[in-house]
Amino acid sequence: MDALHLQDGITHQDNNPQENSPATSPPLPLSPPNGQTLQDVQSQTDSRRINIDKVGVKEIRYPILVRDRDRGEQHTIASVNMYVNLPHQFKGTHMSRFLEVLAEQNEAISVEKLPDILHKIQQCLDAEEAHIELEFPYFMRKEAPVSQASALMDYQVRFAGVRKKDHYQLTLGVTVPVTSLCPCSKEIADYGAHNQRSHVTVTLRYKQFIWVEEIIELVEKHASCPLYAILKRPDEKYVTERAYDNPRFVEDIVRAIAADLEQDARITLFTVESENFESIHNHSAYAYIAGGQEGELPCVSVDP
Image (tube, rainbow, N blue to C red):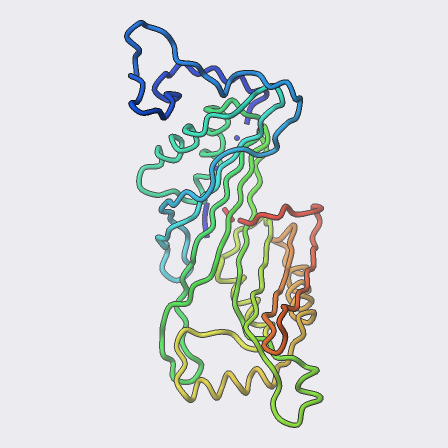
């Protein structure tokens, strides 16, 4: 996988009347005939003295280009969130400027461009801190275990970049669907055992590049069985028996993955969470582990 810098203070003085023309009907002319300057409401002061940690735009659909271990690169569509911090003295931020920065990327953005994008957001919005989050489907070709029937599987991947002054951090998150089979059910039942689909999410920071495919393979290794897009009857027999031979509690899954992540010298910080969508209950089973040397990870996820 692949890959958006901030400045002190926020002086929102906008001299572009077009950007701030109010959405009225009929619209105001871009250059008022009497030469007056349109009011910049966002740059007015606010008297409540409350800083805003993040303000910006969410769920922008935008093409991105990411690294693909097998095919070199992969084109996909991301949901993009972009924010800055807002000091207490300012009423609002200029939302259109986020979109203008994104529009400068032409056809697609990549993870490598995130530091530059964040720096530009800082400059355009005169902000000390900028954030960008990308979430998108990532496709990986998998073969069924017996028939070798080949098809694409999709996985949810997230990149979260933040730049505070001159310091940049990137986080990678991958959600992997797997099968889990209950050890208790297998032990006490005369026939079979209940099993279900589970979502395992690994979020991490690293100091050396890590492929998304590596995270997917690590999670699937510690599940009762991986999922496949196509299964013929011999494949269905195989995955049913494999899951039965590898029962896993939700606790087993997160512990096994965390143990491997702890041994990976490239990783500085991680979280592992698993949600099992129980087939015999009207609730999910859930487990979570955080590890690494840097301290606590933010809730969002990402990669360079």
